[in-house]
Image (cartoon, rainbow, N blue to C red; front, side, top):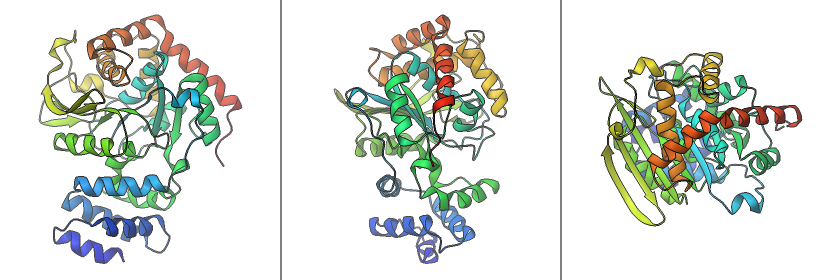
Length: 354
């Protein structure tokens, strides 16, 4: 069945909503081979995923996700996610994961949705595990962690059973150097249904379509950013190294897309090499240095800029500049590292999802 849709994609035709429902059933099922699924994902990426297709796949897969029994204390406030799409292949350390921990330490409820590495050396689940933070939480335990610690990691394969049969095809594509639709979808499928979101994407032309998709999915406040670096590449984060393309919307004001420079922030001279990461253990050591206030260099600047935006988006500060200052205070005081230590303690009692 996937071959029929691949023929349409090869002819440059977008998938219709009904087609997407059938495709998701095929990808989530066991009838099609891994090779066939990988070939379809490659054909879709080669054509270029339209905003309507991305939204359609997100809606279908969200409908198949396992939800969280969130208490009213969590539902009454903002729920933030900070996540990049991956796929920029620039080998930076886990910036968004670090930002998520800083925001939780600042008092924002953060439901961090993610996975193990697919297109990088260290995914968010990998580096959190290396930090001693539990990642394979059941829905009930994750909800409890959000209420008690304002942070929980939601391991995508546990909340999206469909991924069990999609994962091998995605890994095959990654081995071939081929990005897929799922680079875009990951940040759109958070089962906690966040109300506020900072999302990074490595293609600036996708900031507006993906922001519109978040808006369609019910997010109240969001920013989708693509950050430039010298040489013409783009980070799936806000960049301290060049201009940023940003699409954003908030309850109290409309949708906008703009390009802005981080020059107004007290940035230190830096290059892309200053933001480089390694495997899970190397990145965990880098994050520990930042959270304990020992690393005050360009890596901290990247965290402060993105944390400033995330805190503003979550409504915790009035401006991004205020958010930068608040994040700096959190890092200088050691509060962020204390949050990691508290989360480590939950690893002993937290049962894994079965």
